[in-house]
Image (tube, rainbow, N blue to C red; front, side, top):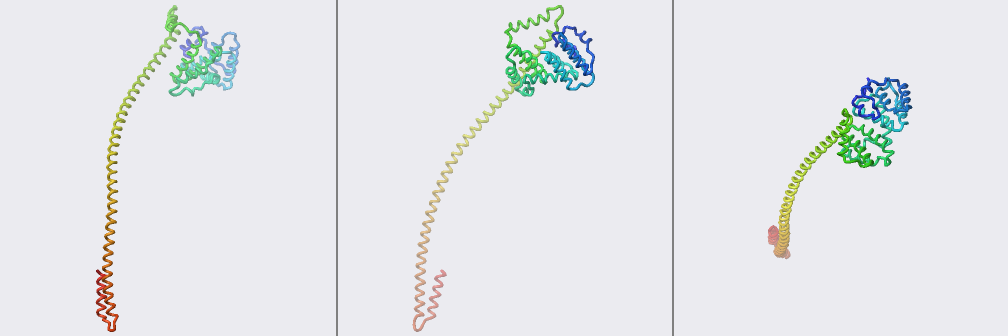
Length: 352
C-alpha cells in the first residue's frame, strides 16, 4: 500500500503552489496504469501552466501495478525536455525521500533523476567519506560550480539533490551550506546579517497570522547553527582533553628520556673506567708474557748447559771404562773377567 506525503512537508516545497493544504490533500490524483500514467504525464507537460503541482500530485498517487524500468526512464526523459522542471520535481522528491515518505514509483523516478544529474555535475558520493569529508565537499563545490551565473542555477539544484542523498547529517548539511555559500558569493553584498535576520523575523510576525513556514525556516537555521556550535564545542573539549593527555605523556616521556640519558652517561663513565682497568690488565698480561718468555729462554739455556755438562761427563766415564775393557781383552792372555766388570760399570753409568 502506497504511503501519502506528510502534510507538513507540503509547506516546505513548491513555492508556486498557493492551494491550501486541506484542499491539496483532498485533491489527491487517482492511481493509473503504467500506460495511462505516462499518457497523463505527457499531457500535463504540454500544459501552458506550470506542470509541477500536477506532477507532484501524480507522484504522490503513484502507479497501479508494476511499471517497467523503461517506462520510468521515458517519464524522466520527457520531464527533462522542460528546462528546470526535472530539477524542481527532483528537489521535492529528494526532500520527501530524506525527511518524509515516498512511494516506490517516486523513489525509482528520483534515482533516475539523480543518476542523470550526478553525471552532469561530476558528483561521486564516495569522495565525501572519512574525517576530511567536510573539507572535500567545500573544495568540490569551489572547483565544480560553474563560473557563469546562467549555469549556476541548474547546477545548484542538482547539487542540492545530490547532497540530500547523503545519510550523514553533518556531511549533508556541509554540502548544502557550501552550495548556498557559493551562490551567496556571486550575489551583491547584502546589508548586515543581523538586519537581514531581523527583517526575516519581522516578516514572519507582521501579518494577521504568523507565517509559520518562514518562522520554521529561521528556526531550522538556528537549530542547525546551535547543533554545529555544540559539535564544535564538543570537538574542542575532546581535542583539549587529547592535547592535555598528550602533553602529560610527552612530559612523562621527557622525564624517562632524561633518566635514561643520565643512566647512559653513568654507564659510559663506568664503561670508560672499566676500559682503563682492562687496558692496564692487558698491559700487565703482555709484560708477564714477555717476562715468562725470557724466563723460558733462560732455563732452556741452563738446561742445555747442564745437559751438555752431564753428556760430557757421561761420555768421559763411558769412554774410560770402554777403553779399559778393550785393553783387558786386547792382549795375549785376555782378562775376560776384568772386561766384564768394565762393561757392567758402563751399564751402571748409563742407568744413572
